[in-house]
Amino acid sequence: MQLLGLTRESNLNLTPGQKRLLRWHHALVHIGFSTVRHIGKLGWLGSQGVSLGDPKIPSPLCGSCQYRKGHKQSTQATKTVALPQAQGAITKNNLVPGDLVSMDHMVIKQPGRRFESRGRESDDKMFRGGTIFVDAASCRIKIKCQHGLSAVETLQSKMEFEREAPYLCS
Image 1 (cartoon, rainbow, N blue to C red):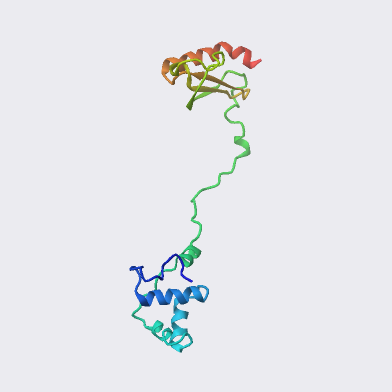
Image 2 (image 1 turned 120 degrees about the vertical axis):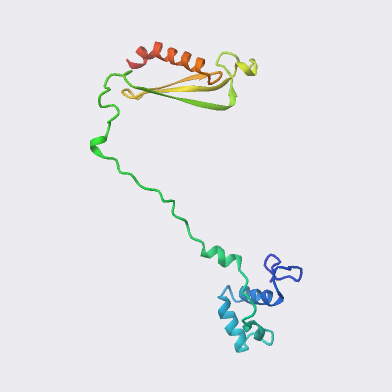
């Protein structure tokens, strides 16, 4: 059996002695190279097996054995435990909806069409992103779609959100 052609004559990366050693290593179900060398010295592997005991032949690396030695690396992650007294610290002093509103941008890779257009608009009229608004007190989320992420469009979305805010908070 020749595994991936490693022990073929055409493989110039291994010496003939290393190829013989690797063949016996595979044939004996991946036992250690030192054990293969010892069995070879005893003459149990025939006349060619005696040459396996030669310490001048460096042991080749077996890919399967190297893979087996691998271990999962630690991510060095730490676990944080939530403190019960800190629960709801952001909304503690902001009990009225609208007192604390967070916002963030989102980017849309595939341009989206407007709701009323039926897909017949040009590319510059399609949605490319938007702004997400989150009210900390009521936990309400509102998304405003935008044609771009410029400051002007973001401020327009913010003003639209503020006009609708009294209706969102009720």
